Image (cartoon, rainbow over all chains, first blue to last red; front, side, top):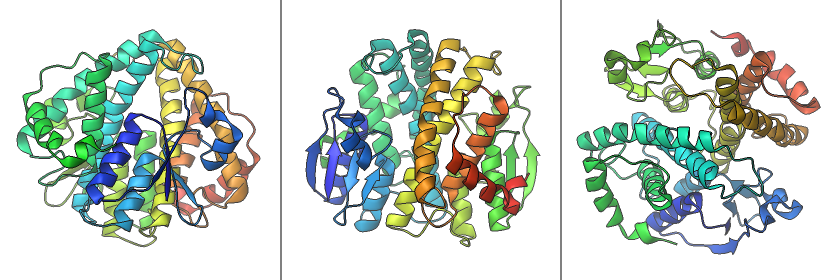
Length: 202
Length: 202
């Protein structure tokens, strides 16, 4: 297998996931800033132009970080990071989606529209960036309350939901565009997650 | 089981999914326009305030339409709309996410920001709505090309990816904020999907 990637929160999700599974594979850097992901060769691998993409040994290309992780969860089932089929898997899906759609997507929209990081290739709307930053901040309480009740986001076990949320949280801290409120339960949980060897996976 | 819902593309995704499975359950309308989903009683069911929510027979609340569908796929496995574990499930996940993140989310952002449908409760940024409408339109070609090669979005079998895309496509047609380009392969596929009894499920 080969992982085509560029430094990004989505690549970090896959790195942590692979480290948890004890999986490694060849890495192929994609020059996003130089627009390599917009050229025909890369679009043949992933027509959406996004990174990362996993190339399987039979030449199949699999895009979308969560789809890549779901494939790896099947390839190497322990520990099971998407949960056992049934209510556990559905609960993990629910918290993964909240982490992604309610928080991570808003942090990303804030970052891109406020900083203009990709302004050479997309229209940035600063006012939307500010709305998105507030949306991300407004949702912090939901995660903090959940982590007051539960050791991990989706229950008693570490899962893909924790990976998505820690990656989004760290990105928000780093890019400093979201006014993150105090969140004592997230802070406690974060210390637990950051103590896992996978946290520093690259 | 009870489904708390309001008329929306997300509710329609669950309706089609349930119809494909032959599952029905009690429906409980939620008055979104009146702000019922922002009140304590509803937030106790779903702290994100979104609809739909599935209440299980043991009183557990499951939110996020895809998490609800994944639970129902386990409860009633035939036909298997998330695919067999492995490359099939991962491919379905990839196309589901493309349908959602590259298309449906942009259509929704265009609709909300251009029409101001929820302007009593959220800041609408018209310029962002226009950027989002163009993003949605720009991605149509990717889906049309896939449907030139494949009878269904994720391969030879109908899946949750087709449900998400048809719901988003129909919503885009109805609200008329996205300049949809001609897409002959989507049109052919749409006729096939619209012929399924689940297409008109309510």
